[in-house]
Every structure is written in structure tokens, then in C-alpha cells.
View 1 (cartoon, rainbow, N blue to C red):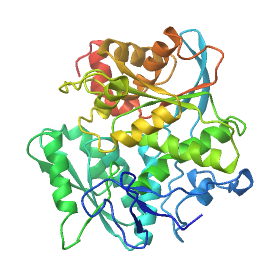
View 2: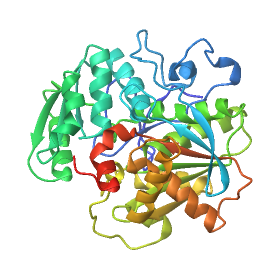
View 3: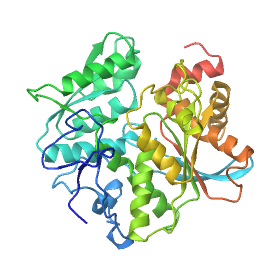
Length: 378
């Protein structure tokens, strides 16, 4: 297999990894060319972090930025009368699954000489980038919409990140980040969790971890909350690598859970007409214009999985029901449990199958939402 390279999946063009880039010359989103994956005996068993799978990464930096991310609990439980395994991804330093991508992306970028990074996110993405930039001695600037609640940016500010308020919508914020990321002076590098392919190779370690958690077997189904699709793509990449190495004999079915109020990927998969976005309690997945929709759909179709559009009442009910099982999570990630209930009810998933529901973010990040669901005033 050839050396890994940046890949435009829509044209097949490639570029070497030696030159840092976050998009193609015409602004197209990039992936990496196929990597060989790893065999069971290549796991660094002494590592208690996602870096136990370093042999599967594009290259190994001499000095990694790690805070022990990964190795999150896989909790056996029951949901709507069916056995389930909850993957508790909020057990990470910044409180969300995005630490996987941040650790790998910033480690590799720092090894390429990058020391100042730009991100646009008012939530978990910004917190993860701020956290790992701080841990790695890097500077970070996080762009957020001007209307963002200060509570959402306190974590990033505490880590030393510079917060820049952008007038207008979330899309205006993304556009401002794109403009700064294209600065010809290159004084700052756009290390976007939505754009950079290295981020996906951090999220793919979820697939490796589930494989190891389950006794080196693939589950039948993996259900993930989906905004821009980094967990869908990460699972697609990781499990495909394991299939390539012969460590698993089939891909698990991968299902994306999205809110009906803002679910463009699920609508595309289900063949429904696009709809104008509306506010949703699943705000972490409210991405109106995901940049890798064709690639996410390829994973869903290729794994024979699917997508579920969830009503606000279903998401709220799942959030409360998880909390009453001791799983205090954001409404955003409770979507995965709500989707499991729907897939059980319509017979898409059988009760005797091994199903993993991925819970991505801590409920401590959504105190106001939980208060509203409980009828409390803070």
C-alpha cells in the first residue's frame, strides 16, 4: 500500500501529507487515502488511551498530545426491553467524544510545525481544541457566534483560548473561519473538527475500541448522533480498516440519528425533501450545511445501515430516561438512544443483536437544557 496522502474523494486527486492542508486547492473537503489498519498484535497494550492504536494512524509523532482520551466505558444495559451497550464517550478530559479527534489532529499538526490553530465552534469542538492546544503548548483562537451564551465559552477561555465573537448566524461564523483559514500570510492554521481529515483518524479509534471491547468482534449495529458526521465517518474508516486486515469478517451496520428540526443527512438518506432548519434541543447536531454529506451517505449505505429523524419529544424523553438509568448526557447524544427505540419498534434492529449506542457528550454541558426539561428555573 502506498504512503498515506490527502485525498479528494470526489475526483481522486491526492497531495502529500508533508505540506499541512485542511482542504483542497479549490476548497474541497479532503479525506486520506486508505490506510492498512492494524492487527490485534499491533495494539500497544500498555497504553491506556486511544494511542494504543497508534499503528493505525497516518504517522506517529515523536511527541503526542494526550490526556488519556479514549478507553471509555462500554456499559451493558437495557433499552425498551432490548439489551444494549452504551459507549460512554463523555468520559474524556473535555467531556465529549471530540477529544479523540483533537488529540490526533493537534499531535500531527504540531509535528508538522503548526503552533497556532483556528476553530469555529461554540460547543464541544471548541472545548476539545482549546483543551488539547493548551496541553500541547499551542495557541488557539475559537470563533463563536456573537449570540453564544458565555457559559458555552467559559471552558475554552479557561484553557487560554482566544474567543472571537462573530456577528450573525452559525453559518456566518463558519464563513469567517474559512476566510481566516485562507489567510495567505498563514499566521494561523484552520484546525477545524469539521474539515481536517486527521480529526477523522482520531474518531476512527472508536471503531477499534469497540472491536477490542467486544472481544475482538464487530457489533451488529452502531448508532451515533450525527451533525457533520465525524463519528459516522470515523466508524466507517475504522471498521473498514479492520475488515481490510481480516480482523473482522463484516462491517457493523452504522445508523445516524438526527433531529427532524435539522437533519439534512438523514433527510438525504431517507429520500425526503430538504427542510429549513429550526431550533432543536439537540443543538450539537444542528448542522444545516454539512460538508461531507456524500461521504457520510456512502458509509450509511455501504454498511447497510440507515438514518433516523427524531422529533423533539422523542429526544427529550430519551434524555430523561437515560438520566434515570444514571447516564447524564446532552440531549444531542440522547438521540442515539431514541433512534434505537425507533429501530427496534420498526423491526430494523432485532432484540437479539449486539447494538452499541454511542453517547457523545456530558449532561454537565447542557445544564440549562436539563433544567428546562425538568421545569426548573435557574
